[in-house]
Length: 166
Image (cartoon, rainbow, N blue to C red; front, side, top):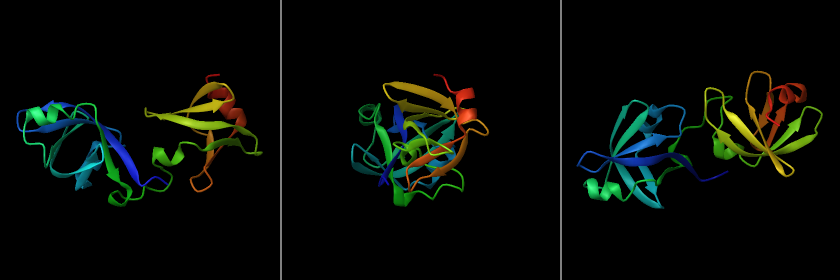
């Protein structure tokens, strides 16, 4: 498992005091309230303040004193260490732990490898199947089991073929 998790991306500076606006990659922006430190390009920054509004997170970070310093962070990934985040609730997973998993049918047929997850009302998985990429929503009844340890996601083949964009 990865030792760090990318939890957002800095969109732009906010105001004149060095605050940055972050597009969160977490299930809820509220998750940012528990982070005491974040990493930008491998450099640790203590979180001084967190505000949430309109689906965005506004962070005040030690070492980012003004708008000019915040401007230099535009587009940077916001990373946290795995030990600083709680285990996901039962039945949910961190995307980084799913990437690279084999997508298999209930009979053991390997369909492909998970290469991307797009977050939406229903997550959309991108599976590399030979030379092509196939997208499918994780709709009810499609995914029947997930094993992070085995890097395996089991799908109902009939349901998969109904919803997949081939």
